[in-house]
Length: 112
Picture 1: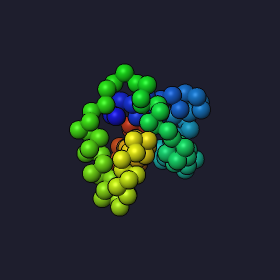
Picture 2: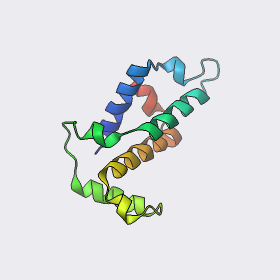
Picture 3: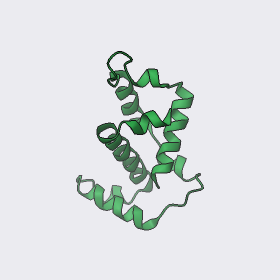
Picture 4: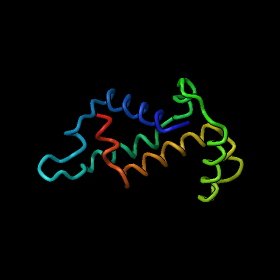
C-alpha cells in the first residue's frame, strides 16, 4: 500500500475515462471544475483499491498497515472493520485522494 499505487490507479481511471487537463481546470479562471470534484468523489465511493493493489509489484509494508489502522481508529471505525484488508485499502485510497484535493491539487494535474 503506497502512494505509487494510488497514482497508478488514478492514471488508469483518467485514461479509461478520457480525463484531460481541460476536464479538471476552468480555462478562463484556472479554478477546479465542480464536475471533476464530483468525478473524484465517485471514484472514491466505487473504488476497490485492495483488488487493484494486490496485483501490484510494489510490496506492502505491514508496519504501514498498522499505522493506517491507527489513523482509522481516530475516525471511530469499528475494530472488526479495521481488520478487513479491503476496507483498510479503500480507506487509505479515499484518505489520500481527499488529502490531495485539499492540500496539493497539482497531484492530479501531474497525472494527466
